[in-house]
Length: 89
Image (cartoon, rainbow, N blue to C red; front, side, top):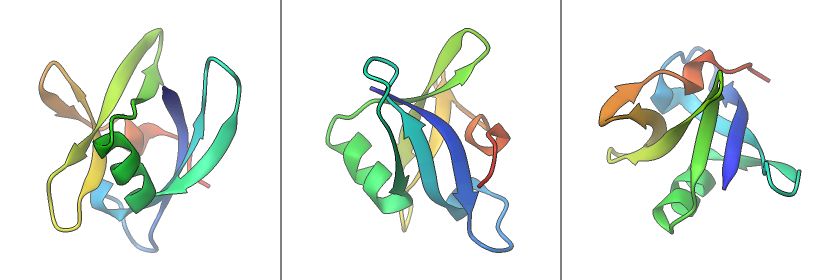
């Protein structure tokens, strides 16, 4: 399990489809890293769990089936914009 902590957008992009890479932290071991969008899509599709911490809640990051696929948070079956609210790098 990882928590996404920041995102990097493609130049001029502002939507989830424009997230190029994501920084993350493993809350259990403290490891940190950075993964491009395709890598995150593959990791989640292979069973990995990613979240965005919002206050004291964790909102799950899921894969949106598009061409190309991208990631977005979902709570109770409703797509959310939590990733876009994260700091940029």
